Length: 136
Length: 221
Image (cartoon, rainbow over all chains, first blue to last red; front, side, top):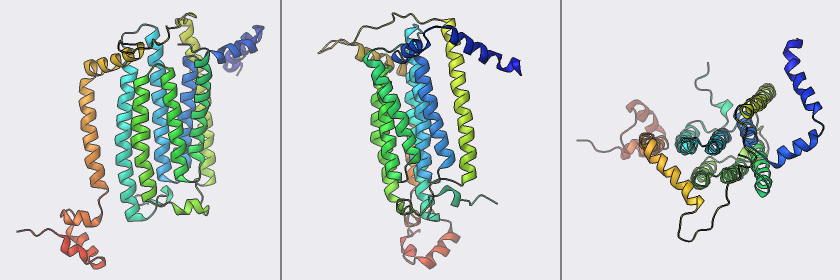
């Protein structure tokens, strides 16, 4: 048990040793770096996942999927910028990949909304818990 | 990559705006409100792209997402009219147990992700410390010559056509398939009948409800 927690404790003690922790955090907040972009991307991703899992309206579920794809795009762009500064010759690959993610998202939205319209025409509902044709 | 000064200020403004708009997207009762909050979230993320020196992607994001995809969403919301939600008589979330379970797992996931980012980034810093004085020169204003801005976009276009030309063509094919597929999916029964694309048995059943369908069939022979 102690072994499991010891890295966390070590981390805490190291932090406590530095005399001006608040000023360090302020400095980190005033100079957002790669990790801040990743944190924002992670939070957007989680919000999208929660939306997909909890909402009943199929259109809002599609919108949550768009949010998830956007969080991934944010990570791609942040890493692309980071690699540009380290002088990586392939740094722009992240931006190229983002273009393709946007293309696939547009195609997915068109097909998905077509399915929603067909479903609404046949079942007269957009609540996902009432669409149970394949459920036994 | 370390932002500072005004860039840091704008980073926090747009990051908080993106997250709050995302939360409101998930929590809004009315689907139209959801769509509008999603638009503001997407615009905020585009602003973050600009801060990360990806201006072309930011422009594409606004043009394609806000100009194309979200307009499509709004049309569909108005087509399948969601009156029940606005009257407030129906529950917008799943059953209580499902919501609780999924929120617990989401919290676990967010904790794990933040932990992983923290550990991974500190490892990255140890591996390759970022130089503190890595400030690039600010954008030069340019009337005719090439500035940093056009150079970045030039680089994107260059590598898009040089290294990713096959995926580019595949993406165009994917879009073609998506166009045809969505047109086929969204046809009404009458449109399908006039194209002679309905199963004969189904057509016989439906003619009872709607005698007009008989006339719509194309005269063969």
